[in-house]
Length: 289
Ligand code: PDD
Image (tube, rainbow, N blue to C red; front, top):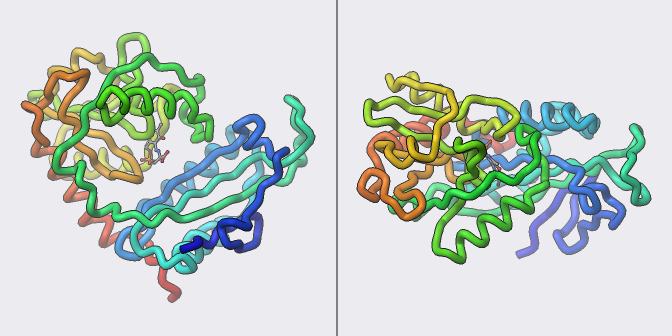
């Protein structure tokens, strides 16, 4: 079934939604994006995604194409138009179109695209088995806190790792783990402390990461935000990823060596359950009120 896609103020059947070949998102990856989950007809962690969208746009000096109320209304409307009660909403803003030129003017009209992906996000078989990750050298640009569409390195690395039988990669820089290709990475030490990389330009400031740290603290876990090495991760009691698409995803091996004996750990399991049950209460309903 054809989706209904949003493009610069209009709704189109997906085959008819067209962006210029001169769009700077296409020519220069001059664009940022957000992915927001919908479960049980509710937007999950929407305020965090909307706030990060603004931070990304501000960092690149791209004007916000719609105001706050319109942005929220568009998220709800696109879910309703596509009958999405469970799945993902993808949003991308590029700087706009101009003849190809490295120097961009300040008055381009941004291109805003949104589409939905129907997906059973609450029924992820990998939650039961956990993921096998492979460490690879960090090779992305230095401004990783901006959620840009420059995803080629991550995509190449994840594809190569998949061909070698891994589920995802962990990027390593100066001996320390930054994050996975499209998720933040966390460990639970043997004394039960949740350790996660502190926020800086070396990693994306994940919205799910923030929610999980808050939840973990409220659940009585000690949380440390600091850099940690691959060796520390290898000897951790548990490890897991967080993202808007898989919430809390257990990691059961690193470079072929098991973590928690290769089984999903109790803390990861508990945080996943707590996150889903809490978000089912607090998510923003897409239904018209
Ligand atoms: N990725 N780190 C990177 C590099 C990411 O691309 C993502 C999200 C995250 C987690 O952020 P959040 O919790 O806000 O989703 C961390 C999205 C889901 C994607 O590219 O599909």
